[in-house]
Picture (cartoon, one colour):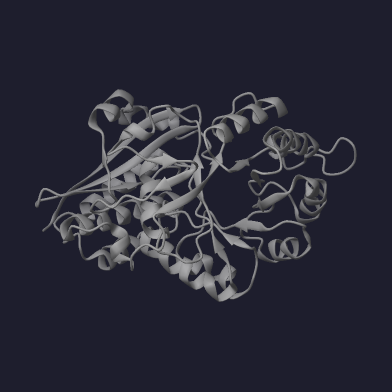
Amino acid sequence: MQITAIEPVIVHVNHRGDWLFVQVHTDAGLTGLGEASHSGNDALAVAVLAHYARLLQGSDPTRIEMLIQRMAKLDGGRAGHTVLSGIEQALWDILGQRLGVPVHVLFGGSVRERLRLYANINRHVRQRTPAGFAQAARQAVDEGFSAIKLAPFDELTAPDHIRTGPQAAWRAGVERVQAVRAAIGDGVELAVDCHGRMDASEALVVADALAGCGLFWVEEPVPDHQIDDLARITAHVPMPTASAESLFGMEGFAPFLRRRVVDVLMPDVKHDGGLLATKQIAAAATMQQLLIAPHNPAGPVATAATAQVISTAPNFYILEYAWGEVDWRADLLAPAERIEDGYLLLSQEPGIGHRLNPSVVEAHRRAEAAVQDSSKVRPLG
C-alpha cells in the first residue's frame, strides 16, 4: 500500500475561522482523515501540506513513525506542527481501517466508551457582555452539558492594560464569570481561560477575585513558556490550573513533566504531534499525578481522533467541545458525531470511526483562493 495524494479540505465555519481537514489517499482505496485547524495561518498550512504530500508520496502509510520523523526534519513552526499532527492522525486512521479495528485498539484499548465533555462557549458568543455569556452558558446546560468554559478577558489584549485598582482591565472579565456562575448555579462546573494575557502578579489578584466562583480550573493565566511563573501561580491560587495547549512533542512538554507546574495538562492532537504524542504525554503525566484534559476548540474530526486515543488513558479528565459554532457540525461526519447528556460516544468503527459527509462538505467548502483572508483570524479557543 502506498500514499498517492494528500488533500486539504477547508470548511468555512464562522467569524472565528475555518476547519482544515487532511485526507491521505492510498492506492488500496483507503483514505485517512485528520484535522489541522487553527495553525494560525491556513494559507501557510496548505503550503506545508503540499510540501509534505510531495515528500510522502509513494510511501507506505503504515510506517507511521518513519513518516513522522521524515516530516519533523522540516522546522515549520506552529503551522508545520499542526499539519504534521493532522497527517499523523490520518495515518493511524488508515492503519485502523486496514486492520478492521478502531484506533483505540491500536493504543491498548479503551478504558471508557463515553467521554465527558465541557462546553467551550467562547467561540459562539458574539454579544460579549455578562448577559451574553450567561445566556449561552444556560443554553449549553439545557442541552445536557455539566461543565462550561469561557474566555472572558477580552480587554487584556493590549500589553499596557491597567492591572490594578478600580479601573483594572480584568474586572470586566470577572463580571462575565460571575454572571455565568449565577446563570448555571453551583451544580455545574465552570472553567476560565485567560489565554496567557496576564503577568504573574496580576494572575494572583484575579484568581483571588474569582475565588467565590468555584472554578474547576483557571487556564493559562500566563503564557506556557513562563514555567516558573505558572508553578508559582499553581502553588498559590485557590483553584486548579491548566496549560500546555500549544506545545509540540515530548520535548515541548518536558518542563511540565519534570515537576508539577500546573494541575491539568492540555495536549492538543492538532498541535502536539498527533495521537502517538498525545498517548506518550498522557502516560508521562502520571509521574506527576497530572490529569489530562485535551485542548480541542476545533472541529468534529479532531474531536473523534482525540477520543480514540484519550479513551485509553487512565488519567483522562474531561474533553473540550467547541459548543454552538454551527448547527451542521455533527452531520459533517458520517456517521454523525454522537453526544448524549454532555458525553461523546466513542466510535467502535474502524480507524477514527468517521468519514467526511460529502454533501455537507460541499455546502460549506471554502475555495483555497479564499484561504489567505481567513488566515488573518486569530484562532483562539
